Length: 242
Image (cartoon, rainbow, N blue to C red):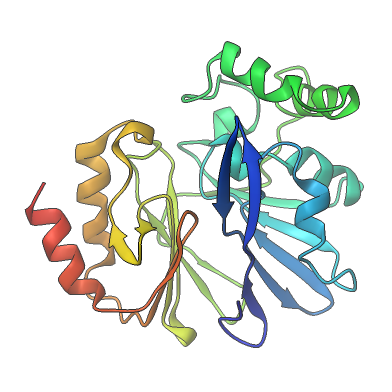
């Protein structure tokens, strides 16, 4: 699904724990390279690459937060880039993404269960990349408020709550808001963060206020895809009903 000539929402389905899950990473093509926003589940690298033009090697990854379905193919992307991959992430989630702290929502038991379904080399690569024994993965730290030099300018919005370092992104020139997991689309309806997957629900709801006064025509949620409607009215309903 194209947002602009150079920005595309990827949609693909995965079987995870016996359930079908649809996710929506985003790829930006420019100057012969690709910028990827979030990377999918562990084990989904080959499927992800089927949706990216092979003429554009991925040289930059923006991670909206530390959850496994957003960082899962980072080991393969790092290997493909031969050490040249630029990785952007918020300081609040950097310790987990660098392997210096445990994942806040993936217990060792859950991680073992998810990785056990993968070939041994992929299991080993994941554990190595997200280990304190190997170099950190984040090359560019974010705090919120930055304007990243992609697609003519991509604004970083700190939206903590789902995780401490969760970010959303706003693309002013196309009036597109990329919410990651700060919002979801369910049955065509724009909803707030999912409570059972959100560490601090009160903070996550308050973070939605960061979207106030943005001129938005398209909302892209990692879970649920695109929403086109009155964002500000929906924010009023979500924030005031909480």
